[in-house]
Length: 245
Image 1 (cartoon, rainbow, N blue to C red):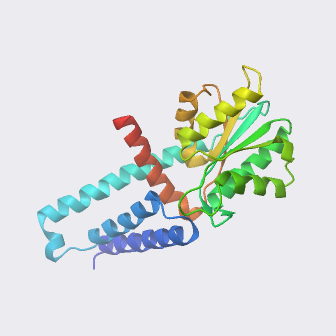
Image 2 (tube, rainbow, N blue to C red):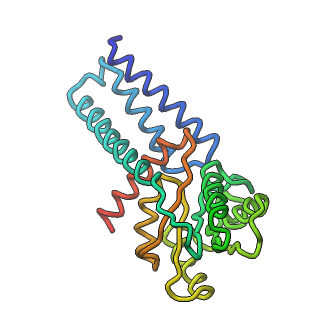
Image 3 (cartoon, one colour):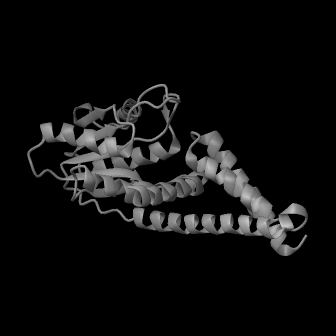
């Protein structure tokens, strides 16, 4: 086996380990499925004989590999941009966007969003905190309730936490949160939204579309086993958003 074949085989193994870890430690998402698919593409690229050596097979597998390389490059841009917080710590409200819950406990990605909200609270204890997220088919409780419990355990006062437990998408996170905040705060209030670094860019698009054109942001990092899956998924979703609207 040539060195390049060995390289592809090693990358396929690493990708498979990553996909397995993401599948076990987090919920199954489009990102984990894409990571499994990337593993198969890399494995195919390590074959240089039989059907895999035919011209159509070579064209197909290297086209797929090229697409994944572009998606990975786009992912890195999202991570770099999303990691640069813009919060001024004078905002009137913070919107913490929900994500997966395993049973009744937050996934590591959600925990990191909540930890970012706790850090924000330490710098601006007067801001209201909206925790937004409904209940998925594989979740035992709403994301909002899970998030509220986590913040209460961390010592955040109950009176500044607002639950929005109907949203099932990022668009609805902002749409429903805006309705709540419009009823509670005077016009012209300032907001900051919190998500993981990979999600900040798309969340910002929806924030501007649903009533928060000047919202700042703060971010939580992404656990190692979700960096590739979340990056792939987010890049695909953003491409779909711009292409199909």
